Length: 291
Image 1 (tube, rainbow, N blue to C red):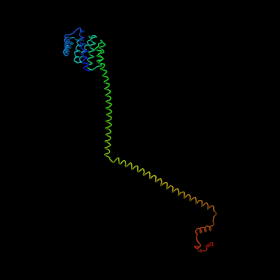
Image 2 (image 1 turned 120 degrees about the vertical axis):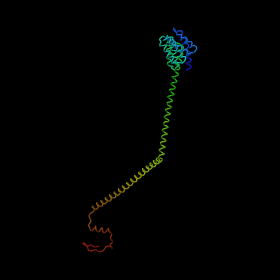
Image 3 (image 1 turned 90 degrees about the vertical axis):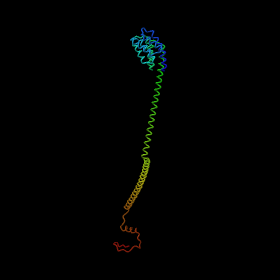
Image 4 (image 1 turned 60 degrees about the horizontal axis):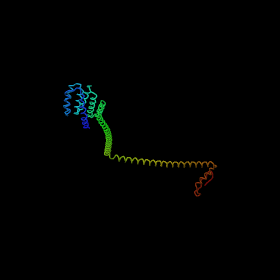
């Protein structure tokens, strides 16, 4: 791209430079000598002669314009822009000369890679006086600007993708480091307390066994208590039945007529089942009865 503009500057600048001399009303001897040096490509010598002309003819727009062209031919773009500005500041430029100054200022900005500034000055040149050279250069820098924008968008997208990829890689690396640290910590704990896990399992089994035993004991106790309760209930039922029977007997006895005391004694003796052979004569009783 730089070579393209170098060719562009040489191709466009020379015609504009040579045409400018016919418009000069007053010219210093140094300007004539400078043009001779410029024509044969001795740009440094031409620059010196044009610089002398600006000092001899103060506020001479053409002398500064010539100096700017000699500087631009040596790719001294910053210095050439200063010379062109001084030419405009004299206030003695014609419409044709301003068009050429703006055109060459566009060339200098293009040489610096400032294509948007170059675009602006090519447009100003066309406003002063339309020319084929300015129109062609304007089209070139606009294409370059469009390409730059496209490249910037691509670079921006690539950078965003790269940043996203870097972030994902960073997160993955962090997760991997955290996992490795966790594994190391677990391994360290296992090495320090190798029986902890086994003890935990044994404690768990013991707790489960105790729960089962406690449950069995509770069931047995409940069963024993139920048996005792049943026995107690049976005894209470039997006692109640006996009491009821006694009450019935007493009731029946109350209902029967009262027997004599002799009869009661007889029945009691009869109940003893005493055989006649066991009887012996008793002493005479008050009742005169003997057995």
